[in-house]
Image 1 (cartoon, helix red, strand yellow):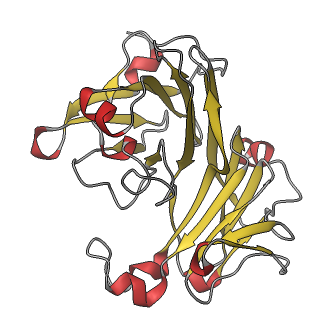
Image 2 (image 1 turned 180 degrees about the vertical axis):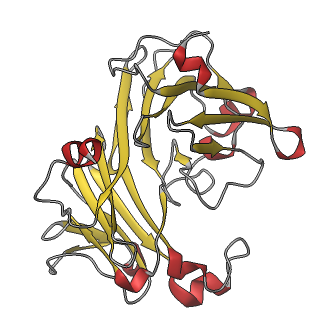
Image 3 (image 1 turned 90 degrees about the vertical axis):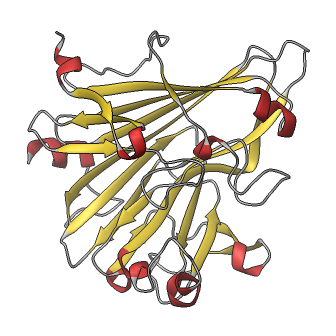
Length: 289
């Protein structure tokens, strides 16, 4: 048995659904489960081919509500996955999808867990239409972070950038602060963002580092107290301990001709709280710990 297979386990989860467990070499685990037809409030839902309500499909598109399959024979990925646990998933068009979005596609996702706990998601979307038609789509990794106290969290790397405020009819503004902090509901799409964003959790003395490629935008969302109280799948106080920071392509959707493929990537790691977005290389800090 290969070292990669040792750290990947396939089993049954709740309600008999298939579950994939990726284990760190140290023995800790990160578990991915799926319970259709409702999207999961948490984890990293895949938003495709629509983001939000910006289109005719259900909110954030249908990919997060579909059953994906383990891809037994994935194409080669450029990233080095030696000494890492990984699983390849695939979502393809179905007759149900074609009725609401008349295109054929292959959506591949490689989920990789590194030896230090860093998590990498690599997506590949291909237009497999046979009628010569192009299609256009939006995409996002809707990443939910657990934080100790949202009022003590700051996000660095997005300061001075333009953003679309979804609470103000998507009007465009420029971020004025030296970092993003939270005192009320936030729902913003930051534009032309850097490849590295830091989420600092002061109370836990921990910083999440988000690195991304092929995804120029970044969505920042917290529903705050009033909206949390009317959300059936979120407790009244849960907004204090969560934050979504999402690598995305929203402002300028991607267009693929038949046979063309798009690739996007997100990598998450945790580093000491002394890290800030403009200083240390998180890989160097993380792996030297």
